[in-house]
Amino acid sequence: MLSPGRLRCIIVDDEADARRLIEKYVQKVPFLELAGVAETATDALFLIRDLKPDIVFLDIEMPEMTGFELLKLLPSTRPAMIMITADPSYALEGYEHELTDYLLKPVSFERFLKAVNKVDGVRFQKHQPGNSDTARELVSSTKEAEDQVTDATFSGARNDFLLLKENKKLIKVAPGEIHFIEGMRDYLKLYWSEGVAVIHMTMSKIEEALPSEQFLRVNRSYIVNKKVIREIEGNEITTNSGRKIPIGVTYRANVLAALQKNRI
Image (tube, rainbow, N blue to C red):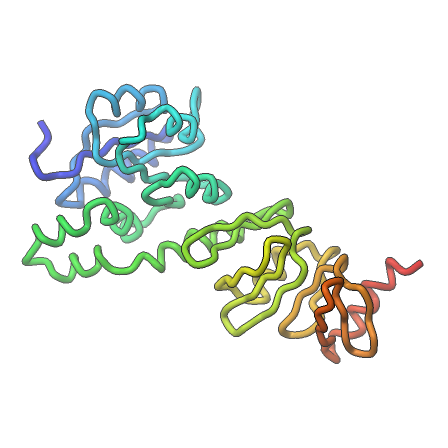
């Protein structure tokens, strides 16, 4: 029998080790109680209907039915869904399904706490007057966790698209849509076909992810897509939109050599 006042949880994952880890985490949190475990999304569908849990920890890649396919079968008044997966490329689709949180395997206990606190952090703080340090930790900002997801998603991106976070939303950008990138200390301004996005990332990191045959680092603060270069005069590039971008002295030889390959 489930104890009153606790949040009832269901774990859905076809990997035994992954299920055991989340079970251990659930047992360590005073306001959580395990209601059931399922190895497939099909079994989970019936468990959710019968047990009416408060939280579902849901894997994505499972036999018979994926986690996302399960979400489509649930009513609008569904439990809080916390997705747990080893593949960061699912992050964008996860946000589109309005998940409570998105955790990457292997999940740390600290990250797990932050996720479950989103469901009922205020209630937990109220019922734990003698544990103020834990309460403050549980109701603290989730910025670190969000950065973890974004960084992992970005590093796992393939050349067909990049998954970047702007403020609290994720944007899916194909490299071909990017015109140029301007560095501003720890932030980047990404000029692309949809406008301008400001993201928290370094120039070196985004340069590693972009296809080198398509993009040029023209100075310390700019990366330019070759296709938007209209002309070069002296040490200055003019883009198709008329933007003037300086070529750094130490970058000039590499820029000219890269463009020379396309010379007719």
